[in-house]
Image 1 (tube, rainbow, N blue to C red):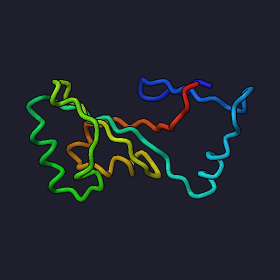
Image 2: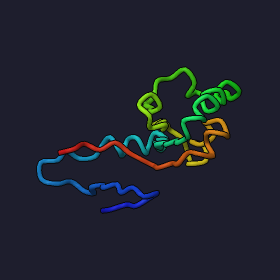
Image 3: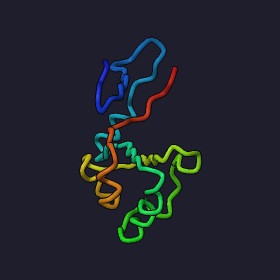
Length: 114
């Protein structure tokens, strides 16, 4: 099954294939009040780096003081976070408004590459 969203494609497999273990973990996660995972991708201009990082000082976020991936040091000026939240809006609320306005959100899940 192919699911499209925000310019990315995510392939998910449904059902058990020959030699594959059943998806018991996914069922248990849903029954235990599982929160969705989102990939937040933020982009900014090189001159905005200081503003982006400073904006976190005025925002109580669990993302502060936590390691994440960024390409600022290599000239790409993007930051990625993987977060758990009930909705896309809840995921964006983890970011300062300046950063959230410049961030795309994609719902993601872990898969095992055969």
